[in-house]
Length: 500
Image (tube, rainbow, N blue to C red):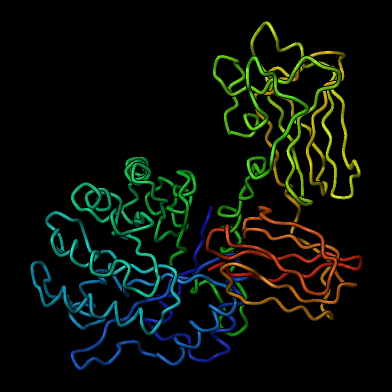
């Protein structure tokens, strides 16, 4: 799961967050829930242009503190039929028709633009919330196109997502009858009708447009005996979740969570740390390349595990004594499992008998080594246990022969984030949020290495700390929240980093 968002719309609509302590406790609880984003309400304005937010000062305080603590922000209109409510300058009550009403289109666009200027650090925005289908709907198709196209690239860098319809049938209808895919970066829908069987249709429509998929409003209530919306969203492997009214499960006076939340967490945090193959990020070399075949070392990290020579993705060295292949990551990385794929042709797979898999660190020390007497059929997995190393190397030790590999996958180690915390050492990280280079400033006697994780525990960067000030290049990372772990002899320290 790439994103899990806590939802605070209802507690701000009903004005339950009354003090800064309430806001702080809400954020404390969301940290414990291990969410990496928060959904906030986009309030409309009355006919005099006055914000309909019932407690704007407290809302603004919460927004500022959430950003400072590294949470990503998603905003869309308050209440069901939210876009139409904004267009009619109202929060509650019966909503007049907006279909074909140009003034309604203009007001919704104007208010979203105004909101994005006032809250410029939102990661995602959507102008609608449960605003119906594209056909026979709250808004006409032309209005939907005008709203999305006008807002696109005009909301202070926020990404548009959508359609955030009431249910999956409406979301499917929107994709089939509008061009919103030209403007959105996430395909999002509620599933309030419990139409679990339609997830596959919606996901296929989104994936055909290279869009990730969110369930934009889930809870864990099995109202129809067919499974909860949370369970079914996870079962269908959505990329993101908004935990509807999650703030209602928080005691605002002390930040504690209801017992039900831990059941949710067991679901959305289960099996989250998927291994990451870092082999393609390194530079592959080999002892030689047979000129008759011209199959270079890079073919073992091209993502193609086909072991048939005719497939064109198998490395070949000369027939020589002790041929080798290696991938160099340029600096020490946290290395977990190594998966070595052999050539599968019947004629030749036995040639890879008696080979050794090694990991060598930046000091040229071998930190892991294992020899296999039998050839892989089709692959072997070398379990390193998690070592720091710069080079993964394969040596063939069976006399004079050619080394041929179909693929080598090197997985970043899944190191636990639990740690003995060092609280008395001052650490500065800046800028934060960061777009290109993150500086870590700490006494170099306190910490020996750093590791940057996704919120799901996947390692994306790791290296040694040899000086007081360390520069970390994060320019290639995706936007979002990361965890920076600093390890020393006496314990570790964990900090949040936001990548812009």
